[in-house]
Image (tube, rainbow, N blue to C red; front, side, top):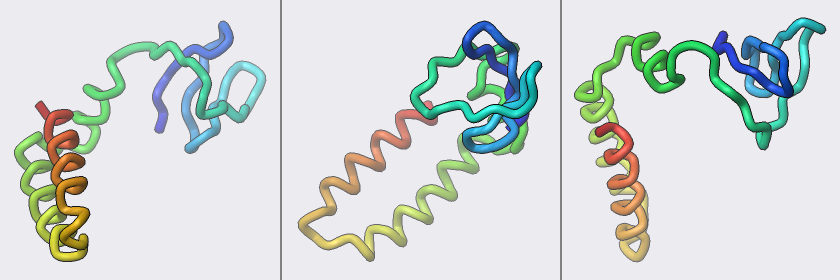
Length: 92
């Protein structure tokens, strides 16, 4: 929310999941749209906005993963482990 970006040559501010406000008012921005971020990188902004460290996220995710492990059938555990590894790679 409130991220600034450029779309089709105009500057917008994100105001909802698919909505942004620009010079001509509110507009629907499709998911497939190619946007140019204005200002700080999105990942850096999100990390500072919520104040969570990677360590806190990892701790919370480990608890969530342990709960999911008990819910996922044995034949799908390998898929769950692959998804976990991909998530943790994004934190590094």
